[in-house]
Length: 129
Image (tube, rainbow, N blue to C red; front, side):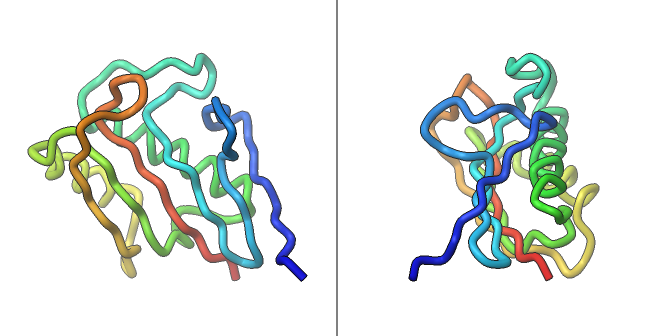
């Protein structure tokens, strides 16, 4: 028998704009789609520097985590995609505002482009108790 999947969706994060879900729960594990710095109310990319964009991304991920019955504290892995690794120190500083020890595992990657010309995208995996 395949494991039942629960689709996680909240209006407090940007709506999925394609054939994907904001997150999918399989058992106690929640897999998040990547979030870019979109304003959930307008669907538009926010104005601001890399730090502002990163805060919006973690706020969006936090909203999806809450909709799944958890919080950022239960995230065990993040993938961070930036268009310029020179910006990573700023991304790292913002991440430190949102996470405490024990920190999640992570993979920072520089990519050639992100949707809507965003500078940062983050995906995640969360394990619920």
